[in-house]
Picture 1 (cartoon, helix red, strand yellow):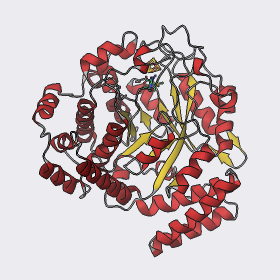
Picture 2 (cartoon, rainbow, N blue to C red):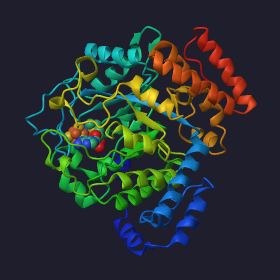
Picture 3 (cartoon, helix red, strand yellow):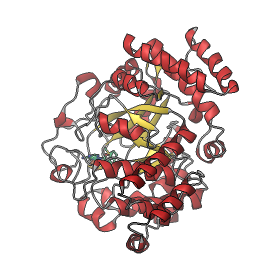
Picture 4 (cartoon, rainbow, N blue to C red):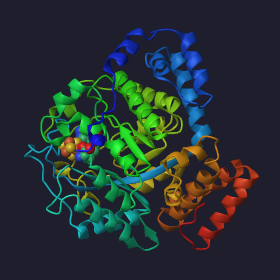
Length: 466
Ligand code: SAM
Ligand code: SF4
């Protein structure tokens, strides 16, 4: 076995416990000092984060949320990137107590989509207007093994419908070997995403009872192998509800620091899933460390301040109201119109084959209308990944604020495409108004660039980006 696999990611539980125990409970001066530091957009350390976590006084909480909003606006403007998950298989050899796909759940209808079925699902997503897909699978592949994933990525990129195609495939699949990650990179995936679920060793052992996923170390080192294999954009996350969220956030910070030290760049995204009810799982309905809606918003706000340039992803696990409240606090990407059962886009939702139940069941058009009426620009942009602006190169552009001059025009041109090709009349009306308002807010240089790109899209050109 290569030494790379034997390495571990240092999650120092003692250090986390000490920091949490020593964190001031009510120290408004310290909280305001941390918020002032966060406004400089240089991020926070673990002690700063620990000082923000106990905030409960309404005035200070409001200051925390306002600061998160300011930081988000400064870096991401009013854009929200949209994507859809594509569940290709619910076969799984692991026994994660919280998941309906776990091996011993005999209530689940099992299925791995064929390549033809994947193409049908993708057509359905393209016809809704999606351009970014997250491929998701349980940890057991049909006969062809890992090759199934590679073929599925190829199928997704090869599928077309009308003016549309999927332009970026991200994947959320079980940890791979270094060689497999190299193959995944060659298949031209965007982000490799994997959640540690819980960074707490004891909790991890308690909820992962069988299969390869029992190995905490194999999972936590997956990002090291992915990055060593040349996958620049990796996405990490915690499944909130398994263990105290304050522990998880500090452990997440340690994981980020490890990647920054080793590769010079941290994760591209952080996901913040909360446990949702799942068929055949008691723990999913009664999370041992449930996170309230208020704490969820606090988590998003604190992460936005701690790692200002890292994307934060929120899924349709959350309901529309909470999603609306959380956009402003720092979320940069959301899924929409999702199904978590393989085949769900063509054959409809089926809880008996789904991974968990959803909080937001709305179709993409309705989500877009909602997001746009709140003043956020729905974006389907895939430019950075396609122009090689990934990993450290992306951060080099993002940190001095230069990335905005690309993101804003790209968001508007992809939104314009959506409005022309897929939107309902009602959404188009809301959207066109938002586009002209957004142009008015731009500096003259970005506005000129944007107007040129929008004109091309209106003339019929597609996939216009800078
Ligand atoms: N099987 C792979 C794995 O476990 O990493 C990848 C796909 S798995 C379907 C994607 C994620 O779904 C898991 O990492 C877990 O965080 C999340 N998940 C599982 N059960 C869930 C539940 N009941 N509620 C919310 N999220 C859940
Ligand atoms: Fe399988 Fe992933 Fe579900 Fe665990 S979370 S049972 S590995 S699909």
